[in-house]
Image (cartoon, rainbow, N blue to C red; front, side, top):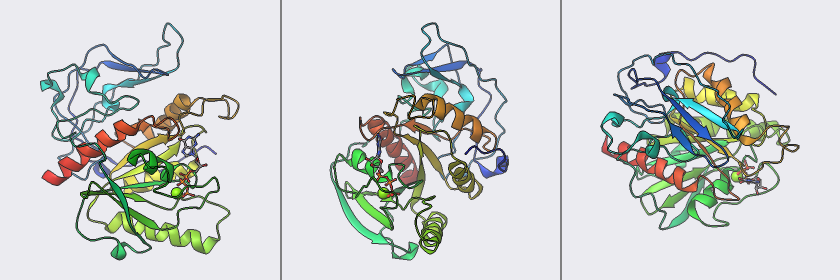
Length: 322
Ligand SMILES: Nc1nc2c(ncn2[C@@H]2O[C@H](COP(=O)(O)OP(=O)(O)OP(=O)(O)O)[C@@H](O)[C@H]2O)c(=O)[nH]1
Ligand SMILES: [Mg+2]
């Protein structure tokens, strides 16, 4: 189901560090995910993924380029204001070309905070159904949320390179608690129940919705939510509404597009993951003033695993220093 109307979020909902770029276009090519940059120069970074509190500057309105490439490969074309530049990052002073600083299959610029991204060890800590029961200690954490069956638990396993650390299932509704996993004894990954599982009893669904939203609103060490969206199917209204809810409550968000390995046109409702991702971007541009950071992934091919870890490391290290 497609969304026809969602509330437009005002600029004060999102911290923006963006300052007039010399507008040039980025071309994101698929399936090789090459990024071609004609030229680029930015003077200030901007952020939607991290709970920092910058002064607010409206981004300039730039055109999006949608040229067809000569070899007819599908592509996502991004203008500079659709890139995510981490806070405290001055891309005009980067020594390497900006194109080499964009994480593969994403709109994310890599900052000086991207260090210690390897997972050395990962352990399950505990399951909770109340925010106040979650582990104490104040380590930075990232929560995986998304529709039931979108692949949250599978992505967690892919990230930590363990097949069964988080339990997965073909049937939706597998994860039912706030599950904390500690990584390298220094940060948490959190697996959450999915939303939108129509077959679950209404009471249970309301319960999951209540405690996950309470967790988002009241967990002080939550660095960013990772909202998972199935890229193998067209955008769902419930996903757009969830993204909108996170934005309205100023909860930092990164979009992870899952199941990017599912490329068969028939199964995908006639659209490839790149096209569904582009459609989703288009739909959220109606209610987000700046593009949130996003990354393409697959738990089958492990696409996006290193990029997600690098992005988490830069968000985490910035958070720890501020
Ligand atoms: N092709 C493909 N299948 C995937 C991918 N990720 C997950 N799946 C499959 O999708 C199904 C659901 O995966 P889970 O990881 O359990 O999904 P979940 O979001 O944790 O689901 P709930 O806990 O029920 O909310 C399983 O059959 C997975 O094998 C992916 O990247 N590609
Ligand atoms: Mg799960």
